[in-house]
Length: 388
Image 1 (spheres, rainbow, N blue to C red):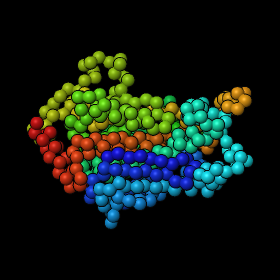
Image 2 (image 1 turned 90 degrees about the vertical axis):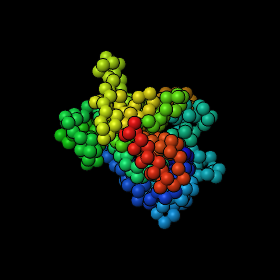
Image 3 (image 1 turned 135 degrees about the horizontal axis):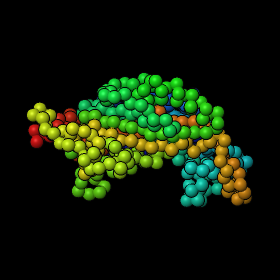
Image 4 (image 1 turned 30 degrees about the vertical axis):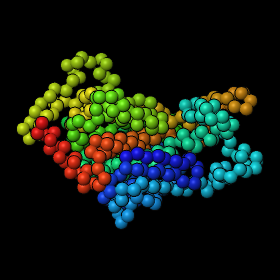
């Protein structure tokens, strides 16, 4: 399964083409729309979320509620584009219109300046329009299809925020993964401890008044993945490495961990490795899951635990100093529409990006033209793993 996305933040629409989805998968626009709605939610989101109410149009690859095996074309209309028709026009226009909303004061931490240098732009909007996190709309749409595949195979996935702007979320002891998932879904902040909601919301409000932004750490957990996905035979076939690349490709993400992650650096081997056990019904397992469900680039059969670190959003309402690219004089950076935080939305994006990589790996391992073939092959493999 592979895909491409296209579109700009204030262009007419966003598009994705997905190839390699087996025939016979039940799929409707509602399946994708519910994920798009989740992406637009969460406490701290800005004005654009009240303008856009994303809905997908499926124009190929699905007929009568089932995938056909053909490429699936997805489109999401940018409702805000109607205010940007001249600024984002495809045709050449008068110089006076070109100068409207021209960006020449690059924002520190964004792609503005380096993108302008790389592609020789005299208007940095050409860089920021594509590098905007608006592009992740389509990665969530693609992820929604991937999640439908995983669901049919008995694999579940969820995310929650572990650290919110420097505030660690206290996780109740012995809380089950299903309880964590439900708590995170019920929270505007995607946290699993409701006792911390008021404190964090107050902090977000303070940050917003300051014209500032905050980041944090998000954890995505996947259950139901059997041992043996991925491979150790080549560096680029390691599944944890593929997931790391995908997570780091999300806008503003600057770090990835698995299991105990960077804490392993200060621990001894006996505190990190997961002792192996065996059960007559379930086969091999682990007493712990410190490695986050991976050994040698392959899944162990334990839940996959992937953590992503998101930096604060670089667009500040009280901007840092920058430079005018025409005069090279000091100027405050351009201000575009922004949010004090987008952690809950980023968690949805991360969840769907992880789902996409897992679906791709499963389809590469159990190559199938139809969902019936895939489900049988996957079920047979599960049985084999238990009997090993």
